[in-house]
Image (cartoon, rainbow, N blue to C red; front, side):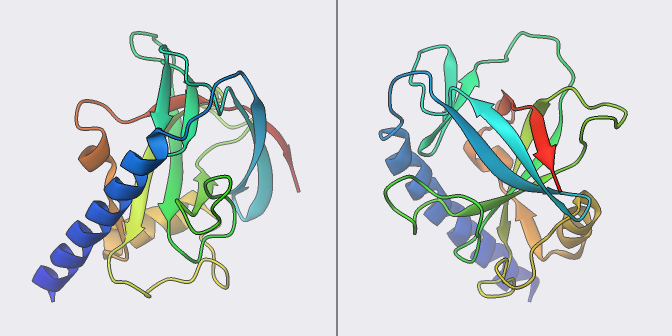
Length: 178
């Protein structure tokens, strides 16, 4: 069972890697902003992702999305922002292709929480067994649900597979919630 999960996780990483490699060529130029949906503590939130489509050399790119300014070398505390890649995700995907790079966001902190700075370290996750989660029907809506799913082996952290030197970071302040 453990070997099967490991093989499935490796296959998921390979598929995700292909999407990321193909998508990075699609990051456009300019300095557009984008409002992204996410979950925080069981509630819908919105966060502002500046320079999402920027292909400027000082900006990071993950798949078809620009991450804004490169924060390497900047001493700014970050908090985890969980990004769950799955075909059942409902919050975001590559523009122009609703089947590519589908993912949901789960924020670990929000304004008013200790440690909130609006800066994030991305934690990239995939399901360990295909079809074991359905984010459209049963989304992860809290950081504690996500960390429990990681601990139980339901979700697998694949961040280091795509960013072996350091996890991707970005600035994206929370601007609203319900």
